[in-house]
Image (tube, rainbow, N blue to C red; front, top):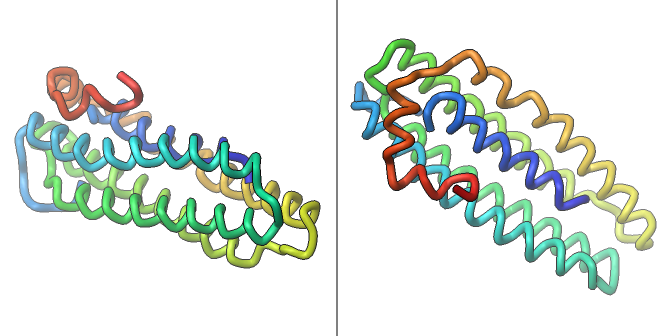
Length: 184
């Protein structure tokens, strides 16, 4: 599996923040409180994935066997899955932003991360079945898994493109929790 797939999945997280201004129902919350909660949910996921992605790239370049490659890939995907679970839990607790279409924005962001979580868990399950009979068989199957993951997440963030909130965007631009996202 190419490391790029983790980047594709992570980009989906960044799309969620950018499109809405940074969710399930703990009640109405201010735009500032909402974006701070969302950014605090997503920032650790982004940081962990970037770090693991870098480690994965260097580790995979020096594997000695297909079995070792499989273990490394499984470990990466399992950690990614734990991270998405944690982010999703925090997003569900973020509440509903008190803005126009707040409930739609909240549900769309939670939905994006549920779909991301499902894609990561599916990939982790598929990684368990990767062949280790030869390096070539492993590489071919891991590449195919990467392509499958990439296609399964390619449209995840598109549902957010219509949901813009100037109030949330303004709150996100002044939130210290949001400034660390996406390398900013």
